[in-house]
Amino acid sequence: MVTSGCKKDFHSSSLISVNAKDSIHTYPLGNWENLDFMPTPSGIQILSPWASGAVRGFSSDILYDIKQSDGWVLVYNTFNTNILQHNPWFALYNQYRGLLRIYMFVDDVNSLPSTYLTSGLNLGPNANNSSMLNFIGQDLIDVSQNNTTVTKIEPTQIAINTWYASQFEIAYDPNITNTSTDQINLNWFFQWTNISTFQFSGDQYGTINGIISTPSQPSNLFSNLLKGTFEATGIQAIDKYKNIPTSIGLSAKAVSAVETGLTSGLSGVVNNVFNAIFGGSSSNTQEVNLSINTQIQLRGTSSENGGIIPYPGLGFFIPGTTLGNMAIDGYMPAYRLPMGIFNIAAKPTVHLVKNTYSTGTPQTIDNTFTNFNFKIDDNSFNKIFNPLVSSYVTNYNESIVLINPIPIIPYIDSTQLETIGNITALQTNYLSVPSFVGARYSPTAAIRISFNVKFPGCSGNGPLIVKTFLANVVNN
Figure (tube, rainbow, N blue to C red):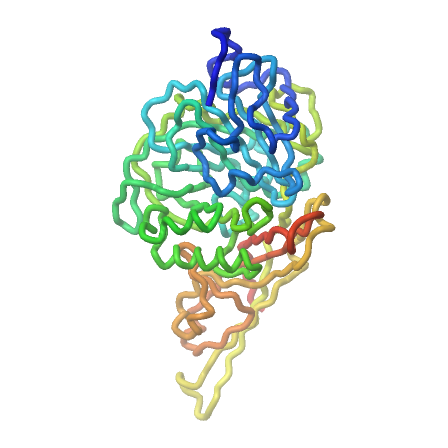
């Protein structure tokens, strides 16, 4: 809600400038979790996103997940009592979950009728090789290919006097502390997209009902089969998709598996997920940050020139970077430590040893079997934790997951199989199958890593973080 006691225009411009001038410093926000109204010039009132009566265009799962005691800190903020730009915004970051959440209050927009909000991040100004965005838009992470742009399609329309929030999980990049603001910035864009229909498994549908993230620019959303992830922030987000699974690009079986994975993860058991954060919020014990692979084909139009912040976006100086010669404009962070919880350096290697044996004589096709023995090469990759949280990491675990082991599925106990989006997975380090099957099976493997971040004052073991990385399989 916005109210004004006079007609004086306190806004600095009609739209947020893509080129922030002179390294704009973040305004303080005080104890934001108890704010009813945002800091504004006299005569203007804007309810905070979590205040009663505020109009919101984001999930209620994250509404009250804002507590400093849960790890939230202020990173950027344009709200202040001196001057108010149109469409003001601020950003919080969670130190124990690696989540960057950007809030915008839309009070001025000359938009065309739209069906979806499209927001995202990209790295600039040059081709710096950072892995910061690798945990977004994919649930099987290939560390040999870094994401430089990620886009979220959110099923909400942009409307006046409404709060919006976009959440991004940042991967820890230890090289950030050795990088200057002249070499790398983080850019945020916020615009609208018209999507008329989409296809899933060859069928045509009219509405996407969930958040879809993809490592693509907004201009590429309609060109090819869109590979990305469906995102959920809580169990309630899954309940409404049980009867309409195709509206998020998943089968009914996959949605059921997601629900099982959420329930298991919130109880501390990893199942049916590759990429997730479970718990960590004292205000909502059912909160998650879950990504599940999906593939859809979009039809419609993308209005790049009509966005509130058009692509490539508004420039942020990244927390942890050193100040360069200031040739690049950007918003200065209030939080100065590197973001992200965890990452790995180099693609992992899984060693495979196969041996064939017979259970009888004479040896026949019916009594000849092949054993597959898998082992992680821990020397092939480095596990890297942000020093801020490294002492809080507990219950670390890593396991081998076979991806779409189609030829051997008839010979596997079905209860051992996991359905993760459009992928069938099997967690194991040993297989024994008939040799005629083993001869035509070439495994694709990944390493699934999970751990808790038991930060001071948290309940239980703290948030459970799950990440899965594609691996090289080496025959020995």
